[in-house]
Each structure stands twice: as structure tokens, then as C-alpha cells.
Length: 330
Image (tube, rainbow, N blue to C red; front, side, top):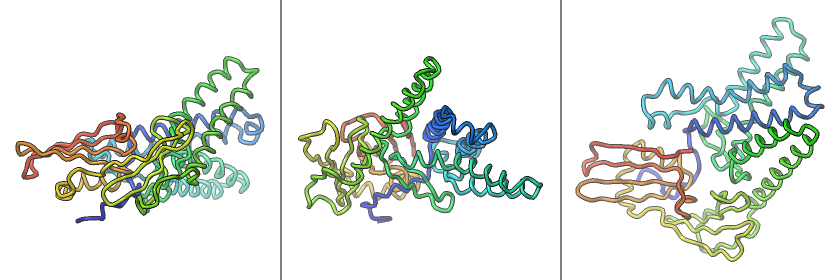
């Protein structure tokens, strides 16, 4: 056995381009919304806004690098990020500020520019850290993705709400404050609901169910969450939050054939996806006519049979003619 299959850390090191685009888009929309506040306009100025935006788009350097270095989808998803984490960007910003000071700029201006650039670099990573995908705060030193998922729908819902509010504010400028304030209140309410979920409020899973307890956002509803108990061979989950009164815990096997799964995990690609990419993998292995087919998906999608991230793998009985296919890994 290569690793304990009860391992459930979301230490994924791959960063799909769609995740990065959503993260950057949400950060830029947050900056655009904040720019509507006169105090921030006066404090930041055009230079501060430019540095904020430049820092926020820095994570896009990773998908560009992956696309240039990888010849296929599997290799692309197996790359390790650099700029998705804040450390390289903060280091570059510090060097730039030091160079500007050496060139004769006042120290106050250098520090101010460094502050705006650092805020832009940290913002998208912080937003990603509030979602289920998490953010590799220590990349490239450590690929572990730390997450405190209090935004169940992630950056998608946040980006949509901000985009609608900004468009409406342009159409009705006299109502700009009300519109942006309303969106802020909704985001705050969702965050408070997610924070309550992370605190384990309302937890009613059986005490005997799993030594490892975790909280995950509901894949469909923004004000619900899943409380999970992880056993050696199964997950026990119950829905909590708004509109979930009376829900009973449900059990999902982690795999249907542990022996075949262990043999298939000799494949480094499958091992990487099982332990590093998927947070709570559910694996179905089928064998017929000397062909082996593996389907790997997330627990949250398996619970409600919803479309979502999926890895499909096919090979023959001898492990030759391998085929990989990734569906919606976002």
C-alpha cells in the first residue's frame, strides 16, 4: 500500500486554468467595486489602482507557463504552481520597491506602492482560500492548499453578484451605494453562514461515524453545507444549513474494489489525482473482457449524482494502452 487511503488532505498541487481565471476575475471585480468608494479613490490614485490590478492578475502567469511547458492535459494538470501562491509575487514586489528606492524615489512612495501591490497579490489568493478549492499559500515551497470554505459557491457566485451590481450601478448611478451595499450584505450573510458551518453548529452525525470530521460546502445551495465523517472505507455525510431540517445522514463507499484500486494506484498519474487533486475521491472500478475502467469523482457530486469534476481511466489487464480523460476539473 503506497499511502493510507484514509488520507483526506486537500493538498492538490494542480491549478486548473478555469479556477485561476475565476479567482482573478473575482479579485478584479472586488477592486472595481472598492474603486466606487471615494475614500479609496483618493487614497490609491491611478498608480495604486494599477498596482492593485497588476498584483491581482499575477496568478495568470501559472496557466500561461503550464500551457507552454505541457504537451497534454494530464501533464498540464500535474504542474506545480508558482504564482498562484503569494510568496513569489511578494518577493518580486519587494525587489521592485527596493530598486525604486535605489533609483532615488522617496521611501514613503516606495512603501506605499509596495503596499498596494501586496494587497493586489494577496487578494485573489485570499478569495481562493475562502472556497472549497483552497489556496497554496506557501507555493512553491509547499503545494498544500489551505482552505476555510465559507463561500460555498466559491468565486463564481461572488463574481456574478459583483458584475451585476457594477453594471446596475452604471445604469443607475444614484443608487450605486445601495446596490453595492446590498451585494456586500449578501456576501457577508453567506460568509457568516459558512463560518457557522465551519464551527460545526448543528452537527448531529453519529459519534461512532469516523474519527476524521470535516465541513464542506454544499455543491448546489449557497447557504447549506455538508458535515462529513471519514472512515477507512466510507464517508458519512449529512446536510446542514438553510432548508435542510430533518435530513438524515447518508453513507457513500469510498471505492467498490479496494484491491484493484491499490494496484491501479501504482500509476503515478492516478496516485496524484487520488491524493492531491480530489479532496474526497469516490472511485468506481470496473473490469470486463480484460479491460479495466476507473471513474474518480468528488463525494459532493456523488451524493446527489451531479455533474462535476471527474477523471476517467482505461487500460488493459496488463496495464498497457492507458487512456486518461478529465471532465470539468474546475
